[in-house]
Length: 410
Ligand SMILES: Cc1ncc(COP(=O)(O)O)c(C=O)c1O
Image 1 (spheres, rainbow, N blue to C red):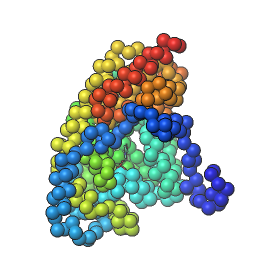
Image 2 (spheres, rainbow, N blue to C red):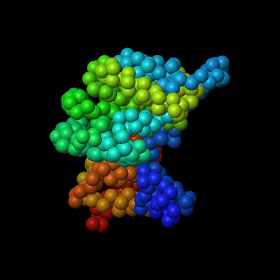
Image 3 (cartoon, rainbow, N blue to C red):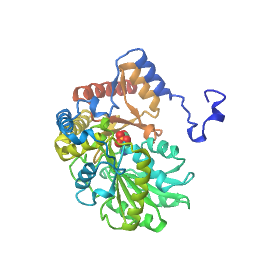
Image 4 (cartoon, protein in one colour):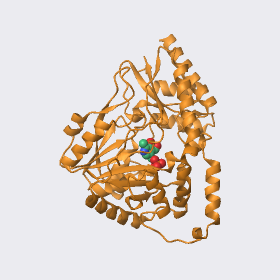
């Protein structure tokens, strides 16, 4: 608590512990001293030389020349041209009126949590996973319950499976939604079609919605992606798929994302009408940004190609570079922008991450930020695969040298 009045003045929902973690404090101090920092956790494509500058320039020039850009005629679900482009992206599985635009995927989560859950109700999230979703739920007064994902067996491929028994055991009468990340961040695993089937059955039986975050769906390593939440669009429980320009078009600054809604028609349309009401209260999407998205979505192959090449190149190099290491191992993945490495003999993630920072100015993410727990034998680190290859190689060399040095000294 920073000051005495705060406890009375601010809501319980806003009573976050704002004390920086030891790692965040050290990084801030490092930056404040003006020391060079090589951030191997940077997953902002525009800082990694991957912004689709030419396509963006074309789209903005077309918009500038379009007289419609000078008018404001808002549509609460978002610009119709953008929604048509999104429906086409989803391969005709749904129509433009089944899409609601949001200012980023995070806003989409907020709308959905508010749509299905009252304060004190529960949504179920996978673990390991990214902590952002808990914060988004808490901002809406919604509680979260983590359900476990089971790592693939050694040499058993890259697919993590949902522990369906544990998920079902965590359900209560206040459960409202089951969330999945497809493919997951940071494991890079798609939701298995059998698990999706089981989730649909569970959702139907218990009257729950399915929220499927599909922001990385286009970044499958072999190009093949199993179906997402929208498959069989006219049928089944209420399902929401989230995606957006931030990952799909490597354009986080566009701030346009969307919720696509599927399920039995009456329920789907009711959900859309309510989402439209909430979106109308904010009208948070700039039509100019939405129309930029409409122009860029059809060019996504060209935009994603360099991103895919970067990810594949860095992943291949990482695998080759650590092939001889007895301490560092790359976990298999199917998709996404991250790599998870397991470091044996290093149970203390902060000692490893802070030690590496102090020694070489290289920053990596400790696995605990994603609930990738350390054990007596070792820990996990998460690396962004978006970095320029030279930077990626330099950072990785520093990490491997540091790990070998610590081993020699232990
Ligand atoms: C799986 C996943 N979903 C959503 C987001 C947030 O995306 P947006 O920038 O569209 O809010 C992130 C951010 O990294 C993410 O990793």
